[in-house]
Image 1 (cartoon, rainbow, N blue to C red):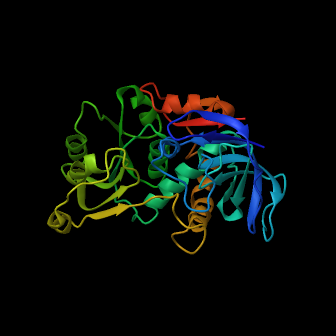
Image 2 (cartoon, helix red, strand yellow):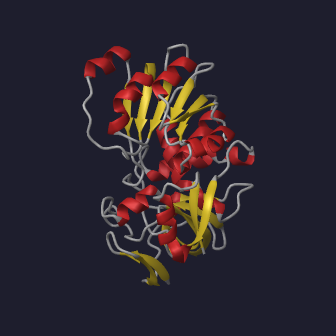
Length: 326
């Protein structure tokens, strides 16, 4: 088969690679499309290596058709169209996937567009699944509201009954608003703390989903309501910050941080298998109900993945997901 190979900070090459082998509990998927994530760019730069024992090929999610079943796999058949959560390997013609990390293509979604869903949906669900039901009119703040995670978070929070505010660039205001964000904040020129407080009569947001990290920590805490929850899922703005613990205690803040890629495949509540199971049960039906949809910013041939990386890293990056299609 062919797969995308790269050197750290160097070019990517679509070249011959060893065919994947289906281990116990795994299937082989013939890839139709893969989605680009910021983590792919970090891995290519040498800053986010694959977990031990996982494929070094880029790609954290894909869609395609099952072509082989490994020992012990039940509930799936050769020919099934699926999308998959991966720890790596999506930028290839074929990939081995634990059967517990497969999802059926949702009703109303094309096979190619389904590649945009597993990483985003599973990440967002992991971040919000333990939140209490929102009070009437309670506000959630989503940072990066035009990105792959943000576009899904806006939709899912709205479907669960939250009012949503989102930060985005001025040129992506319409995208975030069209997905259900009633407040869209230009992060370059507007103060999200001030706007969130004004929209909540001074109370603040009950939940903040953050992709920036250190640079936003103090302001995120300022934007939170009493008993609010701040969940950090990416650190585009740095990894180190100081916090006054008394401030958290007095305001009864819950500060959480999480990642999806490093979770174990199986093993209970924190495993990828359990996250995928919950997503299939509690989120997937919302696609058929027209509450959720993949947001595709652009498509690029898989063999030209480098062009997609350049686009994601540029000021002209489109909102939503970038897809690599075979």
